[in-house]
Image 1: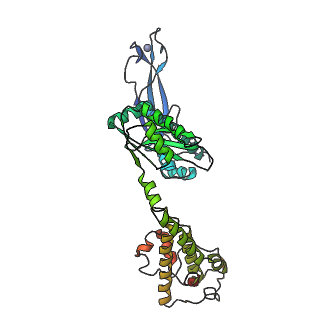
Image 2: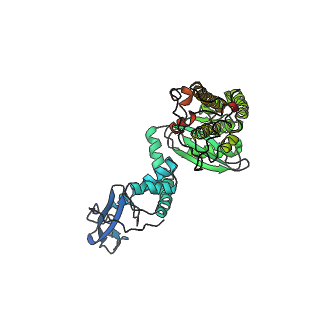
Image 3: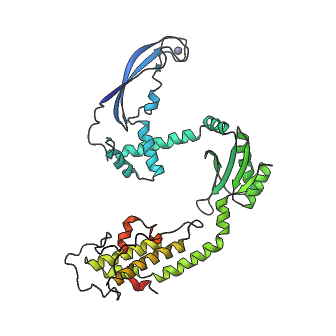
Length: 389
Ligand SMILES: [Zn+2]
């Protein structure tokens, strides 16, 4: 959506002048020729900038009569840019750091009092990507940084988005986190990897002290051939993943069995569609809790998703047991509460059921991974028979 209101007037003004009074190219006279004005919207609000522009008066200078603008201008905004670099940086952080969508970023900026159109957010995100690409491609900066740390520990790994596609090889320095080289290759053979490693090693201004990768045979051979004498350590994550293979397999099998035990959530929900009484809302809350437990995947080997599912279902069942002890119904859920149909058939709510959450259900370790918003949904009667065996 385009901006509907005029850009607010800048309450603050700032005057920028060139660092030198003479031409930076030839050192000749460069008199003040004119003043330029621009408004830059920053996160602090808009600024009215007055720029002093000088022109070289030396006819033999290649910069003769070309504007010499204040150096500081580039730190405020991109040429012809309406928004400050700080705004672009914030957009990039929200987009790529917090994975926010363009409308979300737009809302966040408007909430900060910025007059900006959603379309401008999209355009400025392109500028952000260009600036990042420029910085990553700045070999001078990279060499300087590596020289400062005096050594490099190389990590390399191939990423294949789909089977049969090209493999994106990323060679990274573990100490600084800088990417040294990224290139797509058709395969991962030793013959393809050796030139890649040699290219990186040749471009480094400092010695390579070690290499980390997974244990792929072709990789190991490539490192041995291209980087003789450089210690090669296998990646600990890959190690752990290999070692945990048996456990992960068993866990996956357990999850399949557990899932079978909690089938039938949908019929329970369907039976309560259009009802707004307490029992129906509570039952829907439980169904939602089961549903979210089923879709909560862990990341092997660091988290066993079968065990996690077991923990969450145990917590739900414990909650149901507590409700039953307090006098709730343990009967067939489809029978309970069916006599009290709500007068107004509102769509099923996923919010907090009106039955009070049972104390203690939030303090259990098994519950601690569940988002606070979903906790309240797990504390009310019915639906037990679907996994209670
Ligand atoms: Zn000059």
